[in-house]
Length: 476
Image 1 (cartoon, rainbow, N blue to C red):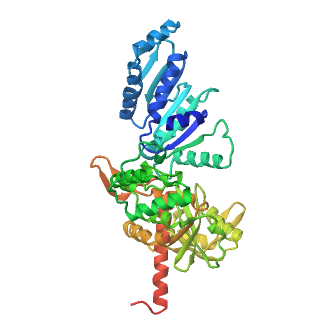
Image 2 (image 1 turned 30 degrees about the horizontal axis):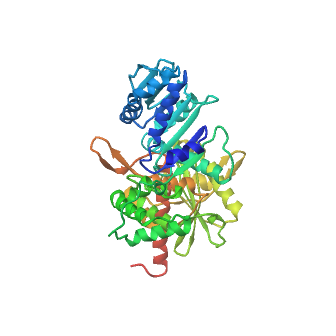
Image 3 (image 1 turned 180 degrees about the vertical axis):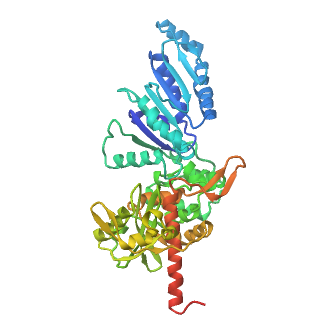
């Protein structure tokens, strides 16, 4: 059913967000195999997330299908004067046929020329093998850039980061605007579990827990998805197995597919609650409540610098804006903060800097970056100055715990903080391949900068809260 629906709506460039086990790779491989058999010099390729998956796709989907073509079908074709091409080779996960066509499965296609490119589980590739994801973009996509070439990307979701997520966001935006995608843009397709008739079971004697009853009610009222008792029963049994991975593996809507927490993520539970409570909102930046806006920076040397802007509103922390850049001097970031405050008419509160701003630098005649910022640093043709308070130095584990305590108090602006939210969701432990377990330290990658800056925010707010408590006579 899903394959037929997709076939009718397919475009030259498609991106498919889906539930598990809907058979898109199987269907696409058989479709491309047919093209190879009935067209001369047609070249099709599939990219899998690793060598084992590539071999399995070739063996179980392409080779199996070819070897099980019925002899009666071959004879029928011969009667109308068509000789079915035969493989000249089937080595290394590839068929090369006697008519000059070929089909294969690999982990990359740089330098090839393809009429059809299918990427299986791109979300998984982006998550686990970011270098391969980049290679697909720079190597495989150009291989299938001919006038009549097609590219199909399909995957379950793997968090809100990477090319698959970004392509989905862009394609959904085009679809929501009612526009036809440009020839270089992807058409978005979503295939949820509940559209497939096999995902149902006998509901007799199945008691749905209240947490799922509430979930089903929200689907009905908010998304107009009315499930049968059999579908609800099936979902309950699968949810009992999948647990937190249910929305990733069997999404009901595109939005919830990307809510799934990243494996090893430090703030998985906190963001589950943030989405559940609706604390990522639109246009929070225009909220009229007055109050000082504070900033915190994780200023990198030869690395990215991340800045968070926030305002305390009662017990809540309204996270108004996030900015990240690299390769810029200190003056750039001071100017950026001042320009942002001026643009929105915000009163500036405290500007927090990392503890290493107190380090003295030989190139600056022994002055600290805190002192340099206070005196003023040049950027462009002007000099910019700012007073920074220094975030107390605290161990990473203690800082992460403070961030866990802070996140339940936060409300984020969806658009202004998008990159920062992604960083927090993807901040995770380092994986030890040899021992098959998580290391007791964070993975240093692109998400570290925003997460480190938020950790400083949490430490700074903890310090401010302690000061306020002591000030009003509530301390010990």
